[in-house]
Length: 231
Length: 231
Image 1 (cartoon, rainbow over the protein chains, first blue to last red):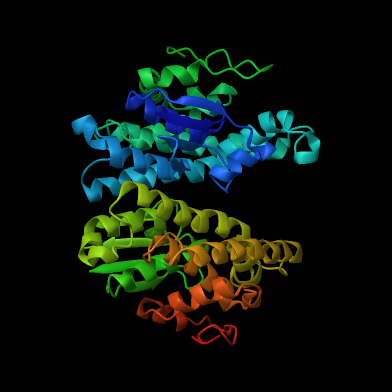
Image 2: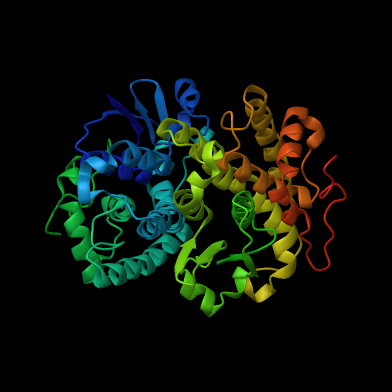
């Protein structure tokens, strides 16, 4: 039995939900507002960030990177040649490089700014650092940065079948998890790169993606194309 | 043959140098000033960050996390029971959790601010974002944060033999790599936590640490205790 502490617009949580979907595991989802700094949650993991995965109520794996490696080590081989982290150490370099690229670089240059400014500020009380209008300078910077990343995705998807090679991997799911948050906000300029858009449509059409497309936040409608497979 | 693109005060590069030392590999070191954005270096890895490890002139592994996993996969078993990433998937969770804690959380809350404000600003030309006096607000914030981290290290080292358990692991080397940069600057308040200090003395005394203690930067002397094993 797997429990996942997550937040609907936390891209790292989304990456783990996609992974679990690919392993056809249905986790018990617990929505965690990390800014509340809930004592029980901090006892699970002192870093106080989502996602945290708990298995058999005793194994606690915090952070998308740690969870992805744990799931691969305990279930990877069950996927046979469709293993999401390839067997070969050299092929693994490229998958992990890109998973880190999207989980860290894309996150800090795009997702973090857009989600913090446009969403979290709205839900986090002023006394916990939230409130106030979005900082439009950060929003503009993120919107400029995403164009570079979209070109890079287009370049990769144009020269390979999937982002890291011939097979779907952590790289595709990590990238799509970040993009899906921005797409919820309607801030992905899909028209600028047809190859990137076609790659995203392929990931978005996977059964593992369906639960993400059903995500809703109270008082906040996703962009009209968010759940549309033919966007 | 292994080549490592690094910088003496890049903590992630130091982590990899410690790893290589534990594997008794002597890399060819190439000092890279990432702010120069050298074309040949960007061709190796578009993220343009140190460290980047190159093996047999063809295998390119960028980023400390990717490199640590690659070295474990290709050499880990040669260390027998002293493998730096344990065999068991559950034990690996704790090692990876702490390696990420120091490589990401400690780095962003302590090392990044101190090294950027006190060192890089001095070497990076103004037109590339450097120059100017250190922002003392950031320096003070980092100095406050390090005390919390030092307590956490003391707590871990007080309840276990090494940070993640009975054996030296990626966790110890990742933590010591970050601390060693701060120690170079003389900004670790060692007197505040004797247990953390004793743990660091053990890591610092390892042969793998020796090359780091010989690091010097032009025009910048390390703190007097930096290379002292009985600090």
